Length: 252
Image 1 (cartoon, helix red, strand yellow):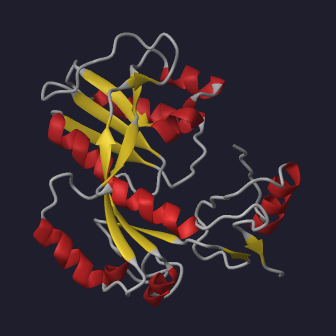
Image 2 (tube, rainbow, N blue to C red; image 1 turned 135 degrees about the vertical axis):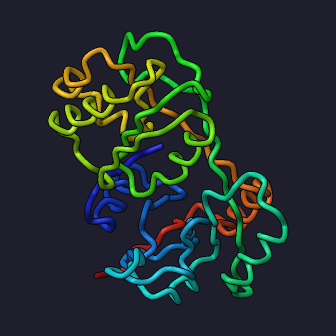
């Protein structure tokens, strides 16, 4: 497997193919509006709590293009749905999406794993229950699901939210620690996301946390009807031949 990072997607794909011409599939992240590369499959993700059909274009909403752009996707995945979502709810969502005959709609849920320490020698893993208070630090686009999950299983949650892809500074951590110290419950911890945990593992930031217990909550994603989804994806990529690369690059 090869991983490429390039602001110019066409150049990045060409570089990957130059490294290994036998690559048979290339997965692009966050590229639904990227039109310079022709793709065999387009997958559109839409959040259960803020689906595209109820949203608006920037700056009024979060959409990067008009809602009708969803017609380009072969697969639409409604993310962050409750694990116990009912068939009636699914039918309501399906009616709102109004998929075309060539589109398939799937649903996925977040599965929260056990806490892990952000830093080495983070101490014993605490039990998150109704006796535990949490200071939640996030720098992701939408932390509502995580916040609601923690609120459901713990005593209370104080959320310190930063923008997506935020680069944390020592002053940010100092302010967060003041909020943490203000929590009167002695049974308290700091929780962040796995994505944010990687950005917090910097010397100056580690020192700013002092001895505070800092943990992250790993997640996995469960696609409902997972076998059907996998078969549909594979079917969309076939037939493959040694002489036909999956991706054809369009000229700018």
